[in-house]
Length: 109
Length: 109
Image (cartoon, rainbow over all chains, first blue to last red; front, top):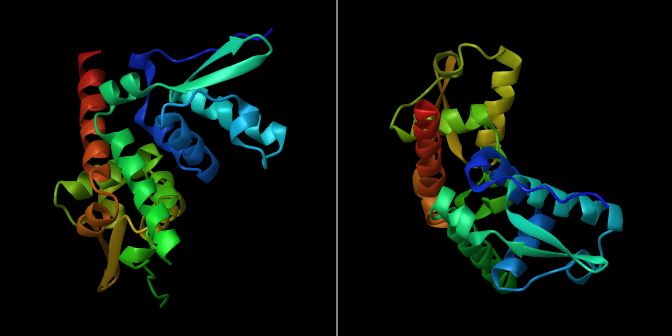
């Protein structure tokens, strides 16, 4: 069983986090996680092929955006909000606020 | 002479801006522009090949991060701070603060 590696807080890199966030699927994952949910691959991305979903989860984990842990046969993900807020104060909040604002514009448009 | 197209403020997309910022060269450009400078390609990226520099400037312009205008034979760039702050409040400031913090860590390390 492969180890789920995570960067330490001090290893988080701004470019890596921005790159991980610069994708609509991954932004949606982060939005869901920010609502306090813990998510497995399958629950959040029903319309994404498994191989593609795996890629997205890995990018988020390796950049330090989320934490993944095995629970029986599934992998459960949670947001590393404390680490992100400590390393890049205000960034996650600004991204989440921008997403909420874009959703509102789309719903009005 | 090709027209320099720019998205309107309302057309700025979060994913596009995050993607534009998720690169070390482009982050450095944004950092310089945020200091209030107006920059031409040549001045800021002396060690980057011209074709690569052109690509970076275009990504930043097309995502709406900067404004480009012709001035005689050169193109002068400036940051679209008002538009970015209006559409994604706090995002640019968080990114600039994170960059400053990473620079300090590197200088200490």
